Length: 149
Image (tube, rainbow, N blue to C red; front, side, top):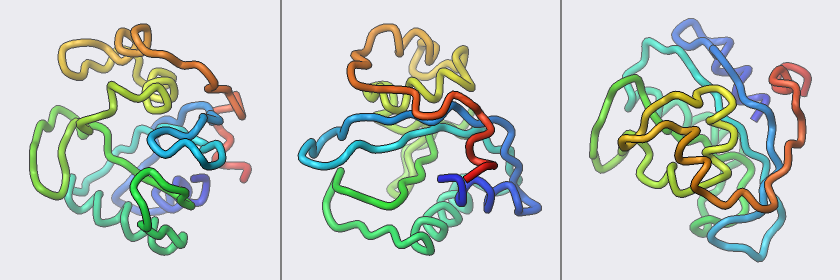
């Protein structure tokens, strides 16, 4: 994650504006695997949503991401959760991410950087209050963790 964020920051068409704390989270969906690490970042970009998706998928591939099984182990998973005020239901990219408000491992780090962001009629902080966060721990409380690793 740190390498991916630094790669985005190093481009002339992207700037990492904010990064959440780093979280250690229990597996979700397929639970017979190791814990995951999760974080959220706000990225200012001149790219279109689809071009940003292509960039993120390219970063995943270069970091040896293999899509073998849904919700299975992975080296890296970069999702576009929101993109300004864009709302779209395209085959390749749905914005806002259709399941983000159901997942504590998304809402906790997102609340670090955008608690007042509204998604589906409620703020991220509001969605977080209504969800079970059992088992999620702060792995690194310094929001500059991505610059150290």
